Length: 260
Image 1 (cartoon, helix red, strand yellow):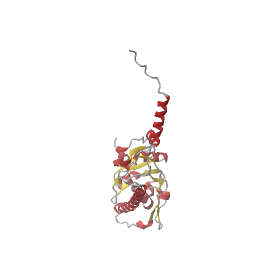
Image 2 (spheres, rainbow, N blue to C red; image 1 turned 180 degrees about the vertical axis):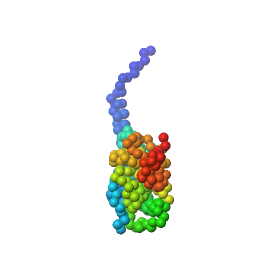
Image 3 (cartoon, one colour; image 1 turned 45 degrees about the vertical axis):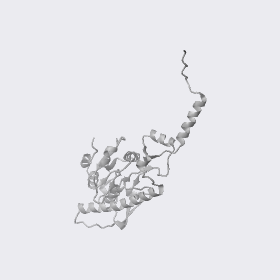
Image 4 (spheres, rainbow, N blue to C red; image 1 turned 135 degrees about the horizontal axis):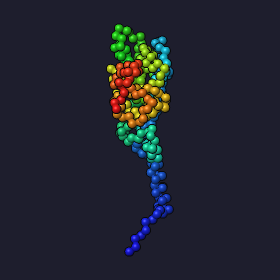
């Protein structure tokens, strides 16, 4: 019995069917969140201002880093997911990892703004507590009501450390930045403890795009870095004191590198 030969190509109807199926599948909404590098904000020039003549003259840039995430109501089509997977600067995560069940764009925006306001207030307290420890006998000549934060289209708590460092630079130590381009990310509590953030790879990519030379990150995020950091001096910290002194001293900064 002679076996049937294996066809070298698909019939046209089958090929058309498979092509239409692929196009249809790629056009369907998919339950994924796309996280990509976001904008940077220079806190010394426009992100943080202090009234009452308390600001000292500063030089350089102190950037807060962010990421873009599609809102919870939007489910990107499959073609976007495929493109994102092929893009080395973007990460794709299941929707439920990024957003809670039932969360909407409205509720997510509300929570992000609330977290940002809390982060701003906490950062001011952390800066004040740090200055009191640094100079116990020197009274503070400012209060929280003197500080204005202006972070457009950005929410969440991850700018807390950057806010505190911007306040310390403007109120006490302009030499903290000293003409350099520094980027910062990390949450902070009133005692100055620095917490981890999401999207560390995408934030490092944003820092590189802004021609930053130094980036201060939470030490807890060291294990999450998968992108190349060549050209960046990464200072990994657990608290505000380490961040402050690491920016002032190259020797201390060297000791605060991510573990190999």
